[in-house]
Structure formats: C-alpha cells, structure tokens
Amino acid sequence: MLNRFRDLGRRGVAVTAAMAATAAGAVALVGLDPDSPGTASGAVSSPCGAPSAATIAGVDAVAARRIYASELHGRETRADIGHITHSAALLNALGGSNDAAVRAAVHGLVYAPHWHIVRLRVIRAGHVISDIGGPYIVAPVTGTLRSHGRIVGRYVMSVQDDLGYLKLVTRFIGIPLEIYRNGRPLMGTLAQPPARVSDGTRFGAGSHEYLPVVLNLHAFPKGILRVALMLPQPAAAGRTHQSCSAVRVSAWGSIAQHIAARFKPLSSHYQDLVDVLRAITGYPSYVTSGSRTVAGRGPSRSPSNGVVAYAGRSWSVFSWTSEPNVRVNLLTPPR
Image 1: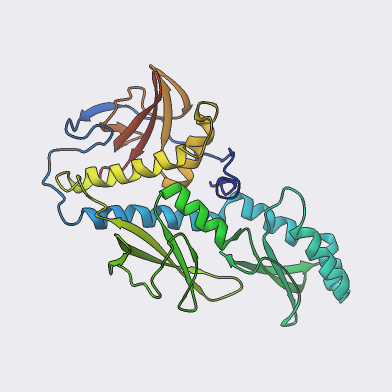
Image 2: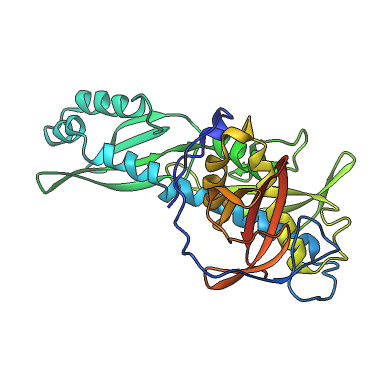
C-alpha cells in the first residue's frame, strides 16, 4: 500500500506513492461545525478541555508510527528484499563460501543506483561475513538467503537511517523530535535535549515547554531506539473549547498542511500529495477545483468542513484553499 516518500525527508523533492483504492459510495452532508473553519465535527458535543493536548499527541504518534511501519513493510522495502534474496552474485558467493565475493556482492547491493538500501549485513553459520552501510540505522528487516532450496545465510537490511526518519517526522508532523539510544541522546532537533525522557512528563527547554510522546523503535541490527516526539506546550491553546473530535481533525489537518508544504510548487504535485497523505494518515484525501476532482478520490459533494458519508461510513472533513478555486481535502474518522 505504501511506496516511496522518504525522499521528501532526504532531499525535499517530489515523490511518487501508491494510493490504496477507496471504494465509491453515496455522499450525504450530515453536519457542519460553524465555529471551526477548516475542521469538522459531528453533532454538537462538550469541549475537549484538558485532554486536548493528549488528543493531539495521539494523532502525532499514529503518524510517526505509520512512517516507521512504511520502512518495514513498504513497497520499496519489499523490492529491496527481492534484490537481496534474488542476487545471484550474493547467493553463489555464500554457497561457495567465498567471503571476498560476498563482500563484493553486498557492496554492489548497497550502492546500486536508484535503490535505497542504507545498510546490509550478511551472516553465514552465525558469523558476520559482510556489513556495509551507515552507523545509525532504524527499522531493520531480517530474512533467510537460499540457493537451490538450501539455506546459505541470513541477512539484516534497512532502507532508512535515523537521520532520515528524524527528517521525515519533523517535516511531516511539524514538531521537534529527539532520538535516544542506550539511554542517551543520539540526535534530534532541540538545542538542549533532556538527558532522559518519560512519556507524558513535561519538561522545559529555555523558554519552551514540551510534552514528550515516546515511541520504542528497533535499531540496527538489534536494540531499541527511544524516539521522543516533543509536542510544544500549550499545544492545545485556542482549541480546548472545541470537541475532542474537532481537535483530532485539526491535528490531522496540521500534518496534512506540513506535508503539502514539502511540495514546491504544490500545484504540480497534487497527485503526489494525496498519495503521501494516504500513506501517512491511512485516510482518503483528494483535491478539487470547483466541482471537479483533480487528484485522489472523494465525495462528489465536497464541503469545506463538516461530516460526510462516503464509502459506507462517516468522515470528518478538513480542507484548505491551496490556490484560487482549488481545495485540498482530507477525510478522517469523526471519532
């Protein structure tokens, strides 16, 4: 379902991504939230209040986990696994116990043009024969190497390094991030990161206060990276009067707008944008010009906010005007 969008983190250029098809469905406008332009809610509900910050943090955590999951299971990762497991040079070298040829084959795989293998380790009989790539790598994938039906070795590979993941998350979600390894800060965006972080325990850095949301991700070849999303406080300023549903939609909308800002000019990359939005959010998005859909798939009637029924379920709408008469729309579950 997911495809390449990591190049936005590495080079800040347009990418292509595969968008999962969304079933067509009847559309009916069922509600608007007149107090929240660009956001949506269902029936009138009580203000979210204090849980607003946690609601926003939850959205950011989901997006960060989806970025990580794409590095493990995305289309490009699967393609690179295929390059490794079907490499005649590698398999023949392993089968013939030719260590020099194994190292040459691994070097060729890691540095092949247009592939994104950032590190590859090959093991035979419990011994590392070759390990080529960067030092700080996230999201390792392991597997077996077979030649003529016989197991000749194992591999550990990754398509993303820590810095690339950091750039993706900060550029797409729009908040600071710190990565910790072995209990110590490894890299991040804060000038003075805390020596240690705890999920949900606020801390101050200069004149700023942050609410960390900590994710445990896998390091290469093993071990845990603690990734702390640093939600600026008060993150929910001006939103506590909204329902928690509206706060959640606004949080997804903020991510959508940060992603859109990576495409320059956006007008030439609307299909790329909706593909990446689907990969990061898991929800449908589409771009309309007047009554015409120019990218993605969505309701035939496209309100600027509110709740619509589409593809057999209800969705909250977040949208904004990207250029005259053109709107970018993101659908999210109302709750």
